[in-house]
View 1 (tube, one colour):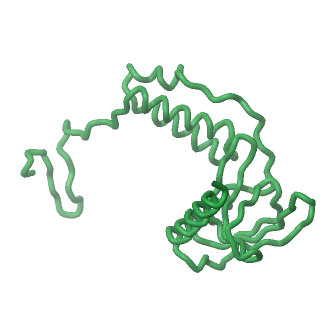
View 2 (cartoon, rainbow, N blue to C red; view 1 turned 180 degrees about the vertical axis):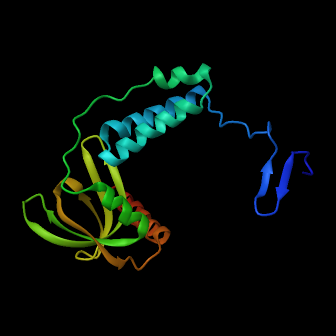
View 3 (cartoon, rainbow, N blue to C red; view 1 turned 90 degrees about the vertical axis):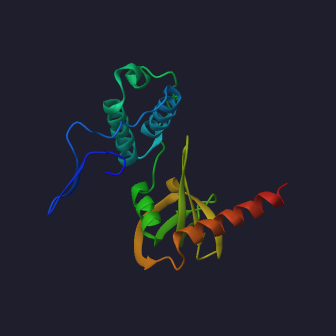
Length: 187
């Protein structure tokens, strides 16, 4: 109100802006729209079904809010993603993402390069998306170290009730530090 914005306060309702006074819409430049469309298009073509649908929904929402002059950036984009065959999955990657967000351990069977199957319990850190598949970075309880696991080699996935004993940000920082050390060894 001190800035002369017409705000009305009513008991039981709260504060509202008077009619005719709206917040300005989210304004994106054409380059920002190109970036959003390119990224979402990549996810549509390579993401698991749940993420691909979310990316399509995101594009529809962006199209609905941009001014008419910029709508062409979405309908006729200046960028493109090359088509690829969707990677085969051994497990539902959406379960891995949920476990990462909720901080739960994951158990699964894993087939090595030599075809050997091992049962793994891991603390998932992140899920990486590539053109040819997905990998999960995780602390492996069996190896006592950070490892990468290809999702197409996983089977019998279970998100455990056991929580990871470290906060997500701490686990991520430890993983990042381990990866930095590994890169330094190869220099």
